[in-house]
Image 1 (cartoon, rainbow, N blue to C red):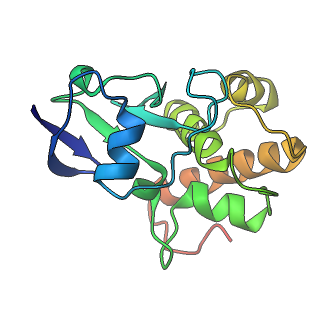
Image 2 (image 1 turned 180 degrees about the vertical axis):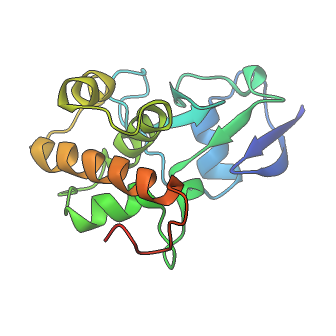
Length: 166
């Protein structure tokens, strides 16, 4: 069956069963490999994407529920040449070790910072709690999320220019 999905601001019509998890469509049909397959049960968070600004586990979210909603993946936050604030912060703080969990962490952090760019450590920890990281880069991840909030605030400030928050 054909389903039209809005992913990173672009409309995509895909032929798939309605109970197909979004993760499979993103990776197999759209070539968006940022969201990772981890557990397949919605328990690790490596597949996290945003749907209408809220984090969801794409491995357990059927595409049937997503027509007419806006899906954002880590690829929608920026590009290799022009990373968005969240991506820049994770790069600058070297928050990734193996990197497998990082796209999901970024997406959950993005949802938080869109609501509250000045979130403190306790709020960041609570927001990221559903996502697992086995490498132990937790402190760098926290630092990166705080930096991303600062970058987002700087970008939103009147008269802010690119690179002003470096």
